[in-house]
Length: 263
Length: 263
Image (cartoon, rainbow over all chains, first blue to last red; front, side):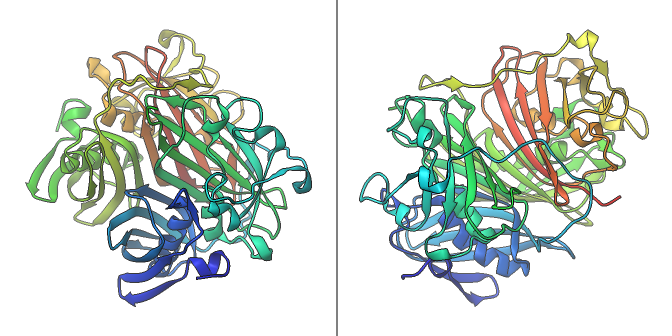
């Protein structure tokens, strides 16, 4: 399977509640498919089941690592309303379940009600002045060949000074492929773990759960992203993400809970 | 049904995957059962299905208002591991589904790995110097008779000055009932909506989805809670919650996505 994100996350309906898909090669981090990418495959099937194109709020629980190869998605519409439809789904390989999701889908569009935003996009040097993460066989991982990440030069894990667990930078798909709401599910899980900047003895942080809210349809262009962890405690950490589009609007908000394995 | 939270959230196993419960009277806000309370009923059944006592991360999607009366919970173990078990469940009344949940359960306990916390509990006057929310038939709602909330005196919705969408205060169950991890699911959805402080024409904010991370077992005593919304936009708002125990430790983190209806 070649091509960009849309091609690598295609699903094909098999029957009323089942879809076939494939975890494409090259979307992995140390051999395990990126969690946002795997979620996007399942979400594409769930959106079809919902009959609504956009995941407004979607949660994945990660059950086992995703490896390249065929997968099957089973999706069940829990409730279908006029504006929203809620779907429960699982994505499984032949080895067993990879993730479970619960999502509510709708069609996002213009809105003219009350607005109040108490936040601003992260300040970033221009993409050219940021640190391009290029893929290698290990770290940065092969996945970095499927997305284009440019990190704030002061926030490059393992390279810059130890600092607070925060990573920010620019995100887009290569080759001018637009980032739609399913692509935003990749964006919210594409950056290196924040904890890698904190100087702690943590070499990996397997995600237990990721929730993303898609807050608006992104305008074309680079996305500004920022991820922060405030609570590395009790063997867990949360990572909060924000994705802002080229017009300066928040388009996605995310939080994941990850394990902090004892080293 | 009388008594406290534990009594009002009892479930009884009917068969391998089904439980009976009841939405007790008096836990409502304008006639609709509190979302955290309704989730706790379903989570109690899901924890039994999981064979693990504590929801580490749990997400509910709200499908229709919960009314007092019998409910049935169907819970399906998606994956059962040594340390974690993941469960998908629905809670339904005879009118239809009320909520769907996806949760990962474990047994929380001591941990001695890396720790870093970049946050502090909210500063609050003593409970005696905070604003006690007492139940009425309308607002504050009857639910306030089932929990004990004492709001920061500067952050009382509709009463104090218009301010940023933030509400903080103390939480406990009446009569000295301890707040366990299921009780924390009530705490994260017990406070008045943050948006009520922002001076916007918003009279209600139905919750689409609530995710809670239970980060530690709470010590006995008052809980300090703070809720903030930073993005009221596009017809949605998020509400981020933190709950800290008497020892000064974060015990729960929450985020919900709610609708901002056009007035």
